[in-house]
Structure formats: structure tokens, C-alpha cells
Image 1: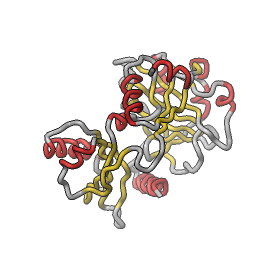
Image 2: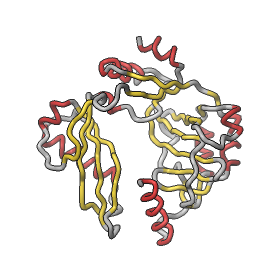
Image 3: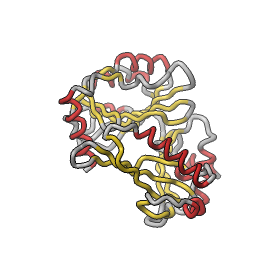
Length: 275
């Protein structure tokens, strides 16, 4: 459903000219900090040769990332119904800043909800800079072990999380709804406003907010934004807002384990270094 909605919005914006050609990496400042790009090979029913040759890889040369930034200027498309071959993740000082997804058969690259025409030649031309890197999926069935692992891995240089793991610094989550927003409201700005509101109401800052999903009204004039609030249960009990959509629940309340993906370590190395 979300994919259909995003495609509709993309098509609407294309028809009105509100989406133009875009430099996909223009929002990243490769002149400051230490940057790495990790290309994570994804399962695809039409795999490509580079996935067999290299698999998951890392690029550490900042001048190569700046070259990509200058060249990756693409026209939009909404013909993006294929699966992806790679997730391209950009890290600054070890922190995930941006994720792009690319299909090398249907020839498009996706940034958030919008996709752009992309030639595979632009991907393979940097192949000599792609250094294979290990990764592993780790399952946790204990909350304390999960907290401990996240805290320790965060301090290890050269190790990357595939996705956001900040929520695992807390015991669980609940969700709220923010309604009647303009259809094109900045969702990041809404999250910032809600963060300040909840902090003011509870007198605490030990929580973390992420976007869950968003919906458009039938006339496409308004947006409803659902947010996940990650926290411990005592903060939830202190929250008195009337916008709660789902009650607080533990990370393990509906599943027997939590799985996280670590880039830069094998499973054996992970357990050895965490212990």
C-alpha cells in the first residue's frame, strides 16, 4: 500500500513539475568528517554479475565519493516496480546518514519515496574501488544482551549498522498520530516538534522518535504522520497525550527474537568482541 501511495505521489509531482532532476548526494558534505559508502548486496531474482564477483563492499576514498556526488544527477521516474540489487549506505564518522537503493536491471535508483533513472555503467565504473567486506545477522532473545551489544559495537571503529539501532537503547515502544498536516509538510520538522513537545511534557529526554508511516487524505490535501516513540515503560506512563495509537510494548512482546545486521564483522568475530 505504501509503495502504491508513494508511486502515486511521485507521479503527481512529476505531472506538475514539482520533482526535477536531482543530485542524489548533494545533501552530504564529503569535505568534513570521515565518510564511507557501504554497498550491501540484496537478494534479487535477477542477480547481476557484480553481486557474484564482489558481493557486499565498502568505499573509503573520499575523492571517489565526491566524484559520485558530482556525476549522480538524474531525471525522475515512477517506473520502479523491480526489486533492488544493492542498498548504498553512506556513513559519516560511523553514523548512517543516507541510504539509496539501486536496481541494475530495470535501471533506477531510489532515494526515499522517489526514484530516478540510473545507468548501471555509473555503478560499475567504480568497481575497482569496491573492497569486499564481511557482514553478519545476529539474533538476540534477551534485552540486556541486546542493550550491551549495541552499546559496545557503537564504540568500535570500522563497524557499521545496516539500519538504525538507536531504538534498542530502550526497552520498547508506543506510537502516536499527528493529523491534519499539509500534504507536503517536512516530516523531519514534525519529528523535531514532537520531540520537543514530549520532552517538555514529561521533563525527560530519554526517548527516540522515528517515522512509522504517513497517509494522505482522500483529497490529497492533508497528511497524517504516524510516529514510533522508543522509550522505557515508565516514560510511557508519564505521557498523557491523547494521540496514542498503539500502547507501549516490549521489543519482544510479539516476537521471540530481535535480529540486527552488522557490517564489518563475521558472526564469530561479533560474539568474540562483544563478550
